[in-house]
Length: 168
Image (cartoon, rainbow, N blue to C red):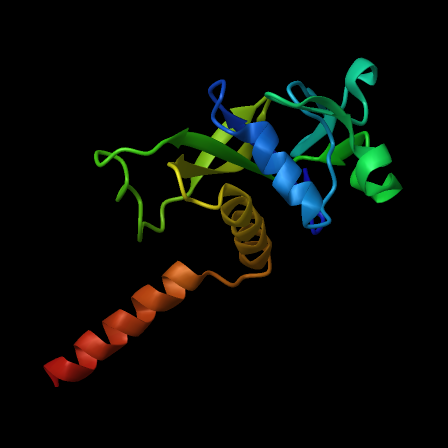
C-alpha cells in the first residue's frame, strides 16, 4: 500500500485480515500496490522496491466476495504497480501474552530484506479493532520519525523531567 507516500507492506498469516485492511485503506483514498503477492528487489543499497506481478495488477481478493478491480471500483489513483518499501506492518493474533509487548520501548523492530533493514511494526488483531486505522497511524508515525519526531522518546523525556523536578 502507498499511505501518504509511505510504502507499507502488510504481512501476517492467512485469514489475518490483510486484504480487508487493504480494502479499508482504499476506501480512505490510499493506493494499492499489490495483494497476496509482491515482488521485491533491491536496485541499490538501502532501497527495496515492491512491484505487483502483472497477472494480479489492479486486483484485490476479498474472502466471500472474490476478485475486485480496484481501478474500476475506486478510480485510477487506487492502484500503482510499484513503490519503494518503507515499513512492514505485521498482523498478529492478539493474546494476553503479547498484548502489552513493546508498549513504551524505544527499541525499533526491523526485518532484513536482501541487505536492507526495513522498519517493522506488529499490530495485534482481535475483533473490534480498526486495523486499517492502526496501519495508517503506523505509517504516519514512521514518517514523523524520519523527520526526527519520536513521540515515545518525547514522552520518556517528559517523565524524566517531572521525576527529576520532584526529587529537588
